Each structure stands twice: as structure tokens, then as C-alpha cells.
Length: 188
Image (cartoon, rainbow, N blue to C red):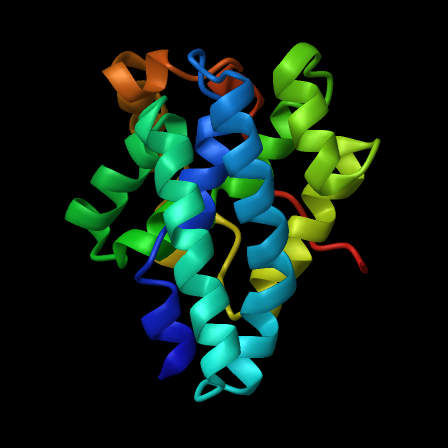
């Protein structure tokens, strides 16, 4: 029950999307890096100890940090993809945003500048490896990583990506949706 409840929240998506947004800047990146690193550390512990007030407090604090990050940029491609996934396939919003995060990160493996530095601050020097670790993190929380896990066939997925790219949130993305493919989990 807690896993499902936590993944209705899209705090990690807010943090990461602010980093691969065209309007990312040093202030938003600072908030996003703090939020994402803390979520990756705290969320599994909170799932194991849902009544721990310190862990709950830390998650509330990082929710604020992620909110500060994306309030300066807005959301990007993961949210653009999430809306039809939720509306047409009934996937909870937080899950609909989160299952695409590893594939988006993987597509940005060669990112440079502020975007690349901030993502490497969270996931290490090789963003392809980092994408695999993010996939393992989500998999460990019970989040399926492929569109098919949510009843989305290849044709529907291609339509969702095309729509997502054309929308305003899709145009905020620094990468290319043609590089979005599911990522297999890797050991941490």
C-alpha cells in the first residue's frame, strides 16, 4: 500500500525534469540535485519503515526542493508522456511519470554543460550506467519500466511519443524522443 501511495507522488520526476529542461539554471539545478539525491537515498528506507517520522520529514523537505526546482523551469517530457498514459491507460500519475525516467536519462548520456554536470552529480560519470541504476531503483519499488507493463503496445507508444514531443512540455526537453527506449535495471 505504501509503495502505491508514494508513487502517486511525482517528486523525483519534478527534480529530474527540471534538469533536462531547456530553462534549467544553476538555482533550479541546485534544488534538483539535492532533491533527487535525497529521494534515491531516503525513499527505499521509507518504504521499509513507513512510520519513521524522520524519513517522512526528509521526504517532505525534498518535495519542497523539487518543487522549487521545477517552479523555475516547469515540467518536460516525462510529464508530457504521462498525461495520455494516465488518461488512456489508467496508470497513476506518479507511475506514469516515473517509469520513463530511466529511458529519458539514458537518452541524455552525452549531455554536457549544466544539464550533464547536474545529472552526473546525481548518477555518476556514466549516465548510461546511471540510467540502469535508476531503473533498478524503480524496479525495486515495483515500478514496471516498459510501456507494455501498462498495456501500451508499440503503436500506441509511438503515438504517445509523437504527441508528447509536439506538446509544450515536450518542446522543453533538451533531448530527442527518438532515443527513448526502455532500460534494463543494473545493480547499484
